[in-house]
Length: 473
Image (cartoon, rainbow, N blue to C red; front, side, top):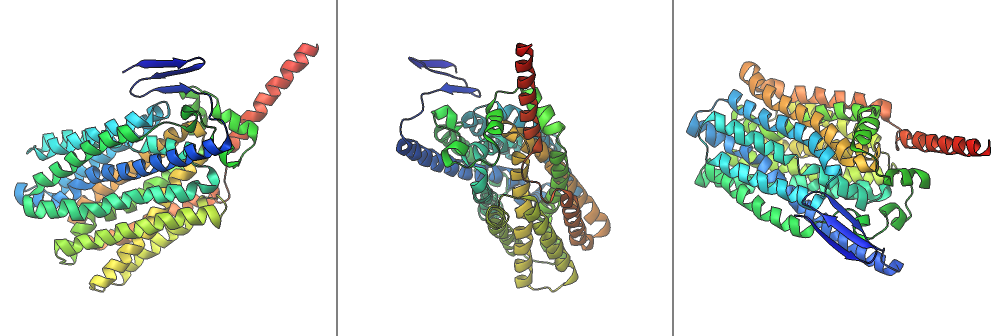
């Protein structure tokens, strides 16, 4: 769909993904303030609800697993392989979609991705062989990757650094909203109506939500004729020249190579993400089976422990964002490190204190979620801020690829190792992975902004100075 609109000097060109607008800015600070308030609230609420539905179709399979084992005789190794397929395709998609997403209109990119995940869930529920399970779950992972890059772009462009941690933290609780809905919606549906219906229901809901997002979302503030968020809030973390550099139209190759692949901070954060997601995925995907098989807990009660994990993550995301904005003045790495230590201790205590009490399981699953969702959220913020503003989707997508390689690894080895060594190895391994995450973060402890932007500004100034000297000669 391509169409144009023009009134004098105003022009617009749009297609399903690309979006260019040049509008005269609204006159008066009052009008700008009203428009900013309206669009920030509309866009934020939409991406919050929308991503919760992405999560619903991503994790539907986890709560269908016990029923699939019973009805189809699928082994835990095969289930682990299926889980790994999603994470591999999802991880690859996050990187490639991040590159495309930085050059695209989030309005269509995110909504079409959600619609396609809904269709994949429906087709998965219609399947009966491992071949089609792999096909449709792999495709689901690919389109799941269309959800995050548009959100990273929108949060980076509509919220400035002094407030971004809090807003990013609030948005990150959409993971927990989706995760908390799954035991209620999917597990109950699987128990009373069968695992196939438990796949159909999230699929239908996500198709409807995709069309809702298509109506509600828009692109950057500048696409609506508004100033950049740094200018609007007078929140300049870097110099005006560095901000101007971030608004320049750099090529996709320059953004990818100079600000992601050659950026050592992104590499360290990405490897850290690998281990963070190993912990999160192992608990999220295999926690239910752990309590059912290892502790003899009924499935409905075990689902409540996963619910506690998600509720803990809800408060952990909010706390991590607030702490990094207020107590650490925009520093993200120290908060990530502190939360990684907390995750290490909570997993270790789950193993060292083998008390067979439901209250104990609830409390420590809550704490595990609280501490693991802090770095799960803030590492993404750090990647966006330590790269180029227009490479937020690419940088977070690149780190996301490592994250879901970790998720795929966790899903695969959790099934295999528990078959060989039993569940006793489960939580000690997760404690070790959390400790490795902390060790990786220590060298970046005081890093706040990417020095590469300053170097680029200095290079431009040197070029301009050389040009002036040449004219004088």
